[in-house]
Amino acid sequence: QVQLVESGGGLVQAGGSLRLSCAASGRTFSIYTMGWFRQAPGREREFVARIRWSGDSPYYADFVKGRFTISSDNAKNTVYLQMDILKPEDTAVYYCASKSRATGTYDYWGPGTQVTVSS
Image (cartoon, rainbow, N blue to C red; front, side):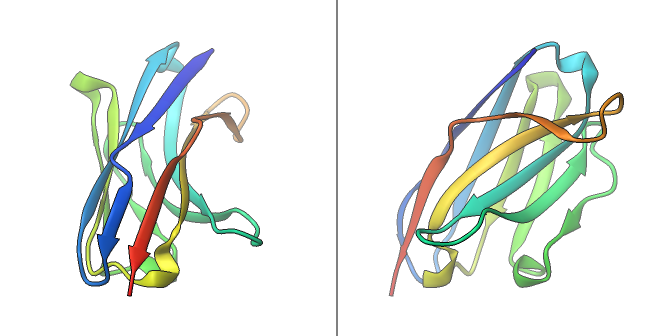
């Protein structure tokens, strides 16, 4: 199994920045891709960004391109989501998840971290 724990959420004003971290432990050798997702109240969970565990091939949802940056540090078993130019509509619980090459699906999820952007 893989255990994931997010941190770095909080309250920020519109236009501000936050950096989320996702620390992985357990069978990290099985991780192929790490993703960030978010879920706002009353809405479905949605994809935000993903990156290969090796640090290659970042990919973003259109609504965060140019504002968010995903990165990984294998030495620390951690993935980051740098969020800049935050908007009130970015308010949500943010989750990280890991995908293995074997299953091709996001098998493990963290408990989430709340991000609130005030206007």
